Length: 344
Ligand code: HEM
Image (cartoon, rainbow, N blue to C red):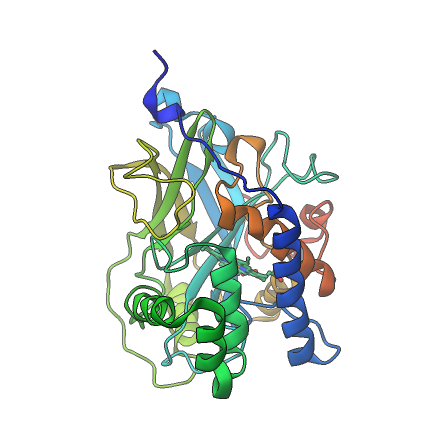
């Protein structure tokens, strides 16, 4: 009998691709109206810091999980961008989604996006929540586009989602996704949505191993101040682990509102070595990271994003990054102004 953990399935409704393309275009139109000519990220507009990192695949990854990026123990160069999720730059003390985007370099193997099969990068994008309040990408985009005009947001949301669903989503948003954590250095991030893990499916978690509380900076950019201060003094680290699909009820692929149940298996360590973002090389690296594109579909075939919301992201990130002429993934590795010595 086959291993039940490999029995996960995606369910792709008819017409989904066209819907996802339309949702991506709706987001783009919203950003276009916002930016009037200077295209920027549709979401996660406000960066905190962009820094160099190390991604260290452990040498004790269980045999069955030694696939894709985790097939071989060792250290990869990586870049990290911390951000607020919103479509506007606002003070960090306001409720917002908080994100971390990782780009891991020197990753051999076939990648997913046609034309980028030979790219040498694997990205992971995560937020502080382990599940999301939206049932699908349409609900997500309805909320994002409604929130762009606060005066009419509630009216538009009720029009798009219906009365009771609107208040369900807003309640869940307040509870799960808009938390104001004291520091992004001590926070735990999640892919929130599943991806392939060779024959398995998994959600990933990045748990901070740094625990020291720091002073809460009163400035509107308190997360940047805090991260920059900590990184200038010493390294930060997180442990990456996988939670595997076990069955359609406790670990559903197509229902992003369900928090998966089950143990986490440690796979790798993300380290941000000591560095100073307030130097000229630090600023140059941050500018290069701002121009890059982080996309869950910049991935090995062994780590294909799974489920409707992930499939919607395939169109959304393509459209957003093309509109803002982000650095091509095909050549991104050639132009990184690294600030640290290569790993030994
Ligand atoms: C629920 C899981 C999700 C997570 C964990 C997530 C995470 C992130 C993160 C961390 C970024 C910032 C990337 C960077 O620093 O460059 C980002 C950007 C973005 N996200 Fe998501 N996101 C999710 C869902 C979605 C969905 C459902 C959509 C749309 C259908 C979407 C559309 C976008 C777009 C358009 C950008 C900007 C892309 C760019 O121009 O670089 N996201 N997301």
